[in-house]
Length: 154
Image 1 (cartoon, rainbow, N blue to C red):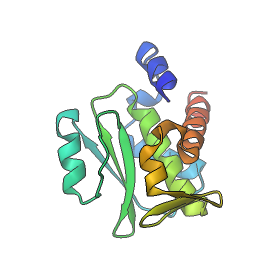
Image 2: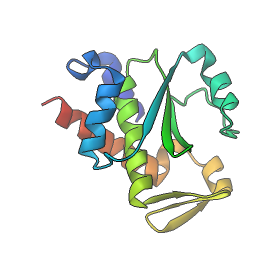
Image 3: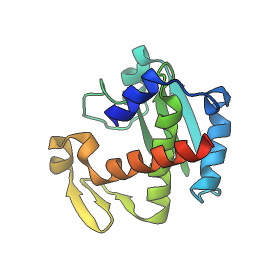
């Protein structure tokens, strides 16, 4: 994903950059066939990102310095929290919406203490020690977000 972020920093978005975040989410819900889910988006400035993340009760114990966005469920809705002052916001929203689809399809199952993805179990100890971008559900979301971006730019 770092390579994609660098690409976007050097090549600003053109079409979807002018859309409201809600429009992007609605388009993605159709593309990912998750139209019946509720998605709430929370744009947060970078200087308050970690504070807000911890205050919503995520129980995040990771360093959030390099985290641009994440998704969690609460009250029958998916919530996407992202830094609203980044040039890659559209790609970050796309990436997080892929996680929504992964969860809805049953490919990604979040448990207390472990995560299952495509039938393989990953313990929190393994996840916390891993390079985040190397985790299979993150690689899948990166690849599919890029595919969605390319499709949306046509």
